[in-house]
Image (cartoon, rainbow, N blue to C red):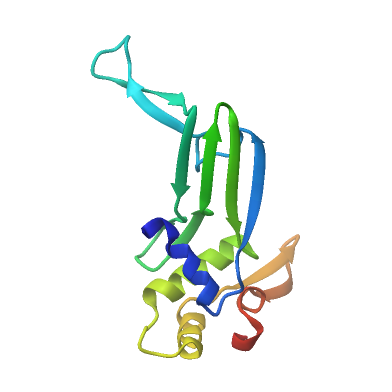
Amino acid sequence: MRSIKFLKTFTSPFRPIRPKFYIGKTTIGTPYFYPRKAIKDPDKPGWLKFVPKKIGFDFVELGWKTKWSDKDIRFEHAPIWSFVFFGYQFAIIWKAPEQDHYWECWLYYELYTDKTKSKSERIIQCREEFPCVWIKSVDGVNEDQIDYYELILRKKYI
């Protein structure tokens, strides 16, 4: 059930994610390669090789990692549900507003805030401990400061 944990965003203080649908030739990676399966390599006993799936499902969970510390979260890829059938694919890619910032902040909220507190208190904790304020500059001159929480939270929690 880890692969659908991201659906908790619908009941969180974060704006809802939206599904993006794709129907067509197999072109959506899951996440880094086209849908594939491992088979025994007939030319190299004991080795495996990868071949495209003819029919199959892939449920790819939210991709993320930590970088410099346990709480330094980095977004890698959105959750994807994919079904392939003889070279064609139906995929649902779960998109979020301000994708990189959204998933990193939501993960911090979900993993590291005190769950005994209210949603509002958890957002305050999240904003203090994991600020998502970026400075936009052009040619080395600071132009604008962007607080991404303002763009990714529901209005009630801003």
